[in-house]
Image 1 (cartoon, chains in turn purple, cyan):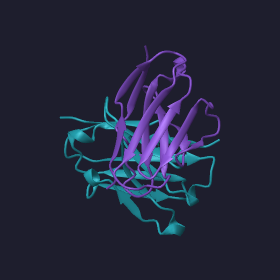
Image 2 (image 1 turned 120 degrees about the horizontal axis):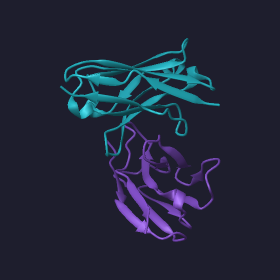
Image 3 (image 1 turned 60 degrees about the vertical axis):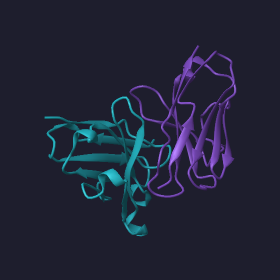
Length: 107
Length: 115
């Protein structure tokens, strides 16, 4: 099975800050990676698919990069509504493993 | 508009069974490969399994913790995917989500396993 790790596990930043979350796969997954945002009590919301493609309707301050085993989600200017937990998920093979999540809040 | 609505959650004793349903609308369900994921209280997301479309073989794949206990099936005439859960354990307590594509998720249904 492919293992996914994320760092940091949590972060606190100010409104307007640039925020970066990293995700690492235990083996090459090319660009078969999603990024999700989840708010408490809600289903996950897809932000980025195929490692760097912005899902329709998602603000352009979100961006994804990477390929192979190392990936990054960037929020260019953190907004109060971005407070959430962020998960990466690989879909290169089954089981479709998720990363452990990164909790983002406002300083 | 794509909609996925889970049902069937509830309280069950350890060793018991439960069947979850996920009713889909707004897209061609028979062509989809729906999946189930879960989230234990205060924990992260965990993929549970998926079923391919009948035209792609209708086969299933599962995460290791549920192999031999959980079964995913589908009824394309009802646009519904099912998750049959047997021999439930306390650690299976979670909100269970179905999703039909990376972007379309249901609202989740809570399963609590407790004596």
